[in-house]
Image (cartoon, rainbow, N blue to C red; front, side, top):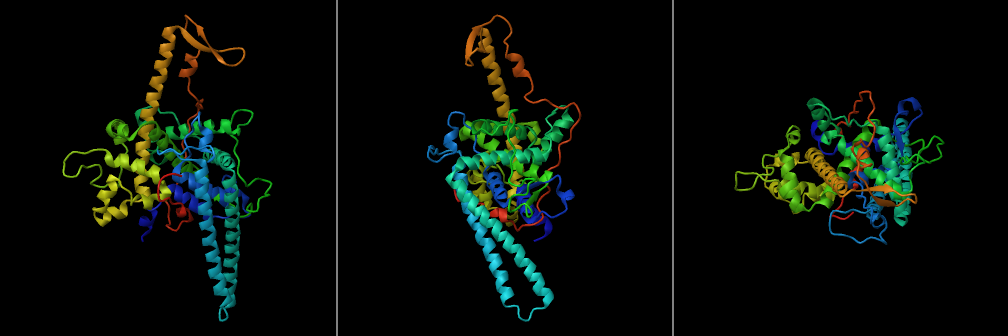
Length: 455
């Protein structure tokens, strides 16, 4: 394969995690001062999260999304923390077996190296030492996964705190959508996802953090990773290294999957197909971000000259069903685009990769978020207008619970409603770039695959 073809196989998040696995912390502290140091367990957690996203918070039933003892499995697009732990444990087992196999192969070569030169033997000895470290790290990851299996709440808390560490490391998010040129630029940023979905993800993490009890005294999410300045973890000197750019790239993919899932849980597929996605396809902001790898048959109704949006709806549903880790299995599913792809030229089949479809998914998610956000805003305004007309507003009582109070003036909470949810610094800020496309196709990340929905 050429370098260009290899670069298009995996998503940028896959590449970022693979680079982290391939990197090792050394004694040059200056070069890694602005990087996030993670254990192999944390890299595997991010791999699972980047495939499926985070379970969508439900204020009334959040505990059922964490513990399998409280869960009522629904046949929809919900995912559960306890099931994600199961995937992580299975993946950790595969990781360990791969590491052991690589080590055993090198040891066998060394044991039969009678005629080998001293230089070659020394090189082989060093390779074995590295593989032994890798095997030990994967063994520890397996043990951590088993621990999380017995305590999915611990896994859920660590996942949110790990995501907060990524968010802090990746830098600021530009939300100043002012001016046509700036809006176009921000829509194309973050791998085409835009910045508003990332901001939504920050608020979603906050919703999880509150019942988890992982907020600090200022109300901010605690950021926690295993590698600390004390260097008391066994992988402190062999940590995986994630740059600011790689942290951002992984966070983007997790945010996209989580936001898209929240929209599908809120709207049935009939509305997605007949209302929301058709609206998105007509938006000028969507049309301005082209899908360069779009197949010629995409959304075409077979035997007719007109187009539909079924391929787009099926693609979004499929990526939620299988996740990016289950992409290969997804291509065996019963979806409209899969049927067309099976009859398409070989060139189309080879070009239909994770990275290629992620571009379309990001653009669709960005615009669906904008539509949903607008609907939420209008509904909230209508509710406040109705309360104002009835002369009732909610004010805090001395004992905490809200009471209804008659009022003839302006609603006291209305000003707060129209304020921005987060202050925007006065100085101009530039959104850091995201990761480049991967440069290799050998990735430990790709073992995270599901055969069917429900993780």
